[in-house]
Image (tube, rainbow, N blue to C red; front, side):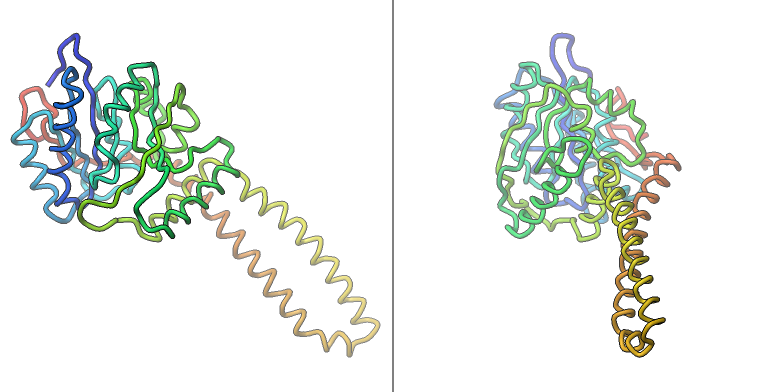
Length: 324
């Protein structure tokens, strides 16, 4: 559905995975917000489903069948929490794109505020989690993570920014032009975004369903940000390894002198030698693992695989509800 010449089109992208109880209510909430506060704009709602295994896809088909402004992309498999939303943003056609979660943790009533800031000249309007109703412990851990990446990153990072916000079409085009096979949206916003406005909000609890975050997914996010935007861990590894090698060479010289002067004293220090060996081994394993993370990130970029492989898309053609 094309927007009239004098009417701006706003794209609302909603990534989802196993959100069968949320996709219909979130679409209705967005539609109601546009009817109430943004009636002068045209809009499209695009769901990108990351290979859900519940009833999410049948319910998306139902939505698309009754409203051609609702569109859907079904991924052929789960391509991860970063690739899928990024790819979906690049498929939008609006004058701006609003990205929000399907679980109602991102408040729908902030959409008019985002659009207002955009109309006043902002290229990016970022929703910043000033507080959260989620587990205080998890919020605390996330705060520590943001502090660490903010301190070590070569690019000034945005704390407590999850991607919820508004992106002008010019920034969406920049995202398309990057051709990054492992994109980290938060870092890209911090690095390339201009005329940015931050809007604080309180993150609500999920409306329904369970979070899909796990230790592995959170670790993956942390490592992607570290390997993409900071050299500090590698510098610590190289400088620390150099200092440790000098220290251990000196210790080896001292132990050799002790052996020559007094063999019995050397023999009595076997436990200390074993401790030093364990320390050296631990440091080597840690630095090798750290180096492996960077090599893995380089490998993924060199392979240059597509962000997402689509299984089908709905309502993207001019005729309406046909699947491609």
